[in-house]
Image (cartoon, rainbow, N blue to C red; front, side, top):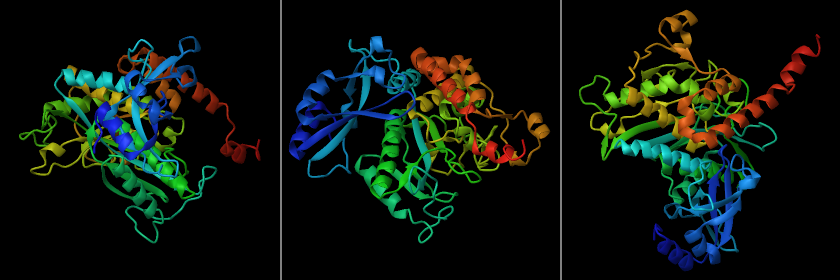
Length: 443
């Protein structure tokens, strides 16, 4: 039985004797939050929502306006497969955060994404997402002791985390998150599970579920999984390559039969929008100080703002068209990392693409060569700019971005910028091991 309505859910909870229901939502920085209720409270929660103190949640509300309501979304009801102990089954639902008067709370990241998706819908489009999230397994959260020395696509015996990945995939599938494939990534102890594409709101919920499940499976086996973008110096960091497309009904609006690259004008304008606004949206897609330790030349992460077909050194890659696979036409945006808030990241990506469509920005020529091997002068001649080099530079660009402010709304935009400035100030005042090792003996 697949629960979709309030009536379905109440019947399923009774039939399976589900004891606890967790109401999940995200704060502005993308951390999972939740309220656990008993089945006795479920009917009331689905009719009226559950109240909570929003002033205790990052970026939600000031103390004088702290009352919030978590309203469950029945379409997201799923059993939690790792909670099958003697105390009974548990389930979860994602929630929309409302004000006490029943109106959407502007600081809710899920509402922010819904608002941006509505703009696409008004133009006749559905926004589809298929992300590839990389992560590391370590012995524990206090150090970076790796579990294996495997490499790209390596299997047993080098890939000792194969069973962890397999168990994670099984749990994800049980929770309705469809997986395309999983494998060992390039760096030691680095892994990837790719999610099958779906609409952006469902995918943002799926990304939150994915991160929770990856960490939970690792915890159950006495290990630690992290989505920190660059936990180890000298090897590749973890990215979230985001495959995306727009559909009109059942037809892929990015596909063209006649274009030599099989990209429609819609797709070209969309890519041009991302390339134009990517410096402004990078604080959202790469929101941590550590994010910029990954975005440096030499480790596969894109640094230079350009697009190409097949060329994996480009910021935006267009996978090669296969005859008969028109609906698979898509673009791959390669700079985001897996520690971003997916609701906000998908929102600014879509906003940039739609702005490109609205203004019909011209798509520059594709970068055919390895951009990393080009000189600075060659890149300048080709009109290839760079991503922000650190969080401070990214904040300054985002702070003056009308596009990001419009996409996030005043409430989220104000808090996000303020929080990122605080993070940067805290970071830049630290004395690092590098400084002590280099300067203390000589100065």
